[in-house]
Image 1: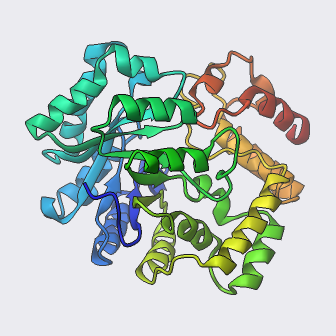
Image 2: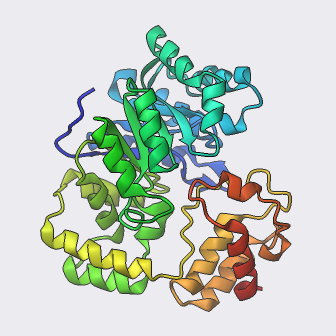
Amino acid sequence: MSTETRHASLGFGLMRLPKQGDQIDVDQTSRMVDAFLEAGFTYFDTAYVYNGSEEAARRALVERHPRDSYTLATKLNARVARSEQDAKSQLEQSLARTGAGYFDYYLLHAVQDSNAGDYDKWDLWDFAREQKSKGLIRHYGFSFHGTPALLDRLLTLHPDVDLVQLQINYADWDNPEVTAGENYRIARRHGKQVVIMEPVKGGALADPPRPVKDLFDAARPGASYASWALRFAASLDGVLAVLSGMSDLAQMQDNLATFTRFAPMGPEERAVIAQAQQILARSAAIPCTGCGYCVEGCPRQILIPRIFAAANKQLAQEDPGSAKEAYARAIQDRGKASDCIACGQCEAACPQHLPVIQWLHKCAEILE
């Protein structure tokens, strides 16, 4: 694979698809898929652990469009596997769910310091290479949430990986927990193409704190806040795709407008981003991306991302009324923040390495 592109392309992340009740809205997803392809974009990203996503990809994409008109990525997740055989069976299951025949990109999912050993002990790196030689996958790589030292070691041990997927956004560029900037520089030093995830930080950068909004409004009146985040990511070199987890047609149209008329950021806009980074560094907001990995297995059935989102309406937006209303919806028939028993499974699963238990205690203080 080439290590350079003219500029990054928009990728359709299939993690946060529109819902009707508890089910994915396949009709709206289909319309979004059609708009995405009609605009000339082709990269779709799903995963074995995205509930219902691979099946939705089959119905909205695979069954409705020629196989050579798009590229499809999915992922193998060792965290949810009970054994080596169970982990390796995920590929067969993903092929069956999607009906895609093969995957253009197959990634070992959410590799980080706490689970890297699982991918080693079950020989999943060799498994991916074997499937590539069989033609079931065209390219292989991994998505990553670990330290720069681990990333450097993995890319040294596995120099044949085709790409690495990294969390990169302007808020996390110098974040000492996420180390987005340093991880990006390591991937490029190894000559690897990068797929960017969480460029809008789970939607948080589409609705940033008021001082950031005022800053962006003054610099580019009328531009969406999400477009600032997407353009920051897409202006980096060596980026294959910038994934956006779009949840409705309005988000799709906004993102398509950003990329069909794409202009890389120049020095003046980078200076604006630097000011936004300084503001966010002082923000009291909980830096949760809403991935939901912490929810699975919670003994108290606490919808942690939704509680954090509610708290941020007070912590970041200074809107306690809306915070209380959102909290009431988040705990309807589910656990409250104060129900946390500090078992720690959420913190072990969190790709952001957040002190989830500590934040839940804070949420209980301000929302209950």
